Image (cartoon, rainbow, N blue to C red; front, side, top):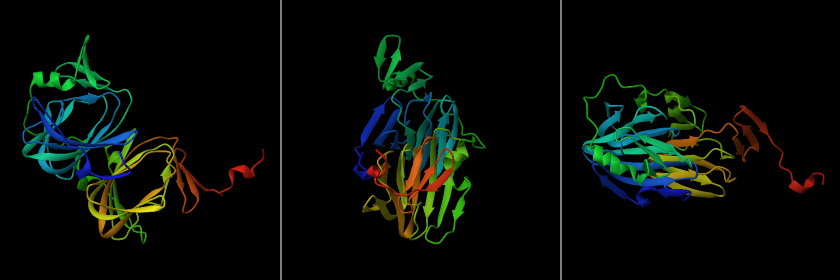
Length: 304
């Protein structure tokens, strides 16, 4: 995908088969990606499935519906966040009377096994496999019919929470005022991370920086502002998606407009990552928690 795009400009794919009925817009980076899934009333977003290694995080934009997991359901609506851990219970999302609009975030592994327990299917490389038969896994799920829709459970499971129930960290430094909710930390993610960032008017997100090994994907949820990207500046508003693959050497930073700006920031986690801050010539060895200032030198100034 391009470095900066708006979800209105993404291709819309309407997937309807058996109980599955949803419109998808997908923005894939290199190692991580995001889909906006508009589940139609009564439809399922996907087959009931679980991943063997990929963590998934979901954020509800609007509408209402049910989070279905392992046969139990939980009512969900705007601002709710759901976490599906690898090798956990099978899960899917069911649209309510008005449908439900959800952002789904996950890594993009070259090889990933996905289990559909109801039809007894394993997906490998994009197709489902039973013995020697191969076809798209949704056909098998369609044959199994819709998931059983039990009465919603109370209290909610730990992997479902409203954004307001997740601890907030307030940063009050002038010019950097921001409230951050670390969603990944709250749910106990291991290989990926996500934060909800609410920036005050004119505030900067984080120091201008780039990563060597971690890829970041940002979605503007509310407000407007400016993306500082390398030597350029780009206006952004609600619905903009920003992809920052690792190793580009091009730094980035968000600056909120007059009404402030709210962003979801998603990334993979890599202990070998190094972050570089060109405005201050600092380098952070993230796995070690060590930050140092570096002196720029010409590559050819050293010994032969």
